[in-house]
Amino acid sequence: MIQAGQFLKIDGFDSFPGADGVGQRMFARTLPFIYTSWTKALPRALENVKGLIEAELDCMLENLSMDRESLAQTIHLARQEVLAEPTKIQHKCFVCSDDYVNLGTGLVQPRKVSFNECRTSNHKPECQCAEYLRTLGIVQGPPQVSGGDIDDGDVDEEYFQDTEDDVQALCEAFDKLGVGEVDGDYFNETATMLYRAQGRRWVGSYEPLELLCSSFLEGRIYWREWAGRATPFYAYA
Image (cartoon, rainbow, N blue to C red; front, side, top):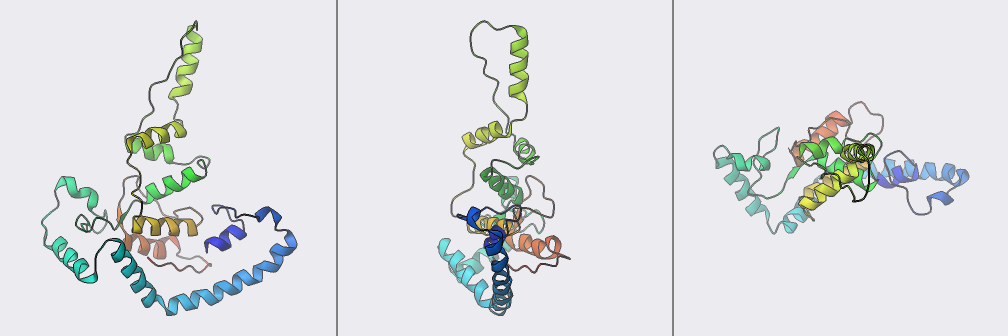
């Protein structure tokens, strides 16, 4: 899906090495192969969906140093726990309220995914990254005025220029806090892949701090974000 989007130069997909060398003739001759490959891959994936999901589950459990028995015990403990303390709210899905504190993973923040991906392209025009960072409490540092003889007009101009919402400055302030993504988070990586496969866009809307369990996020992608579209889409997590 991602490779096809790159070749077709759809907005939201990265370009690929050598894209500038693909002329109109080669582009037109390659299109039938892209669609043929898609029509063969989709039924094959649907036929093998059970095996694919089991393979993904085993891979995830291996990364967590768990097996299916310990996963079942973790789920059982979560169901027996009383209402989560305020400090544990960050480990609960905003929709189903399932608590993932014992598992240590399984929650995805869609707005953080879009923020991280927007940074890779030096921010899209009119992106919502500044709003997202302000919701997290990120603010720019005070303006730095160099010494020397300057009049009041210069001070005002420099002050107001520096105190405007500069998304790059807000990102630098965010980086200094050291609260970025934890490397190797299986569910976040999967959600990022799905986001890229959609041309780096969420069709639905999400609050800046909204946390969703992976199963609910995947279901929302299937039924809300792709409802009524002519293009078939399949992804698993």
